[in-house]
Amino acid sequence: MQSVDRAVHLLQAVAGAGPTGGAGTVALGEACGLNRATAWRILSTLESHGLVTCDRSTNQWTLGSGLVEIVRGSGLDAMFRDAHGVLEKLASETGETAALAVLRQGVLEYVDEVASASIVAANWSGRTVSLHATSTGKVVLAWTPEPEMTGLLPRRLERFTDATITDRPSLRKDLARTRQRGYATCRGEFDPSAWGVSAPVLDSSGRLLAVLSLWGPGDRIPVSRFPELGAAVTSAVRRLSAV
Image (cartoon, rainbow, N blue to C red; front, side, top):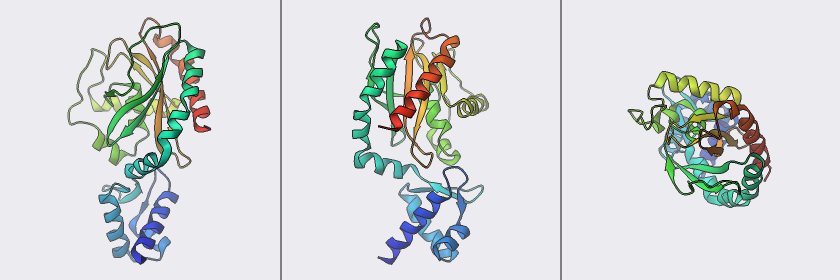
């Protein structure tokens, strides 16, 4: 029971350090009344289960994606189903397709989708998509801590269309712009007919829970509409967070 108690306190200390900066082993141990060796041993065990992650270049610990999976499994999917109304409102307001996606075990999957009554669109619900070539995937990468993000990307960035970003420096610049404006964009980079914007649904600690998107063909969603749709999707994210 003592080991469980220590592990819980360390998890709480890592969470308190925030989703980006993290904290070192010594600082976490001191916060929990543990020596460095004990803290390291427990943190390493938690890391093996994906509950925390360590940036080996800085030795800073942050919460791992395994915690998000536990939360999702404990009822968050039900909240996503309840959010169907948010998608309906967004599709009605913009005249485009609104979709909700989650990251499950490193794979991005659409779990709900609503198309505007005025259009006919392909259904992406249940499909998995690329992380580096979609606005939805770029949100996942932009709001994932660096050590985890590196693990999500393949060794080679596959080219799907002429617009796909296939070099890492350009992708990192795109992700920086995404974080700055609060939403990602895609110009037919995975599917030539799918242009759009996506925004993150975050928990209270700033960790990514889901991604909300608006998409459609390039003739309806040119680059000039990105700011308008970006504002719409970020507003809908705030409504979704309140569901």
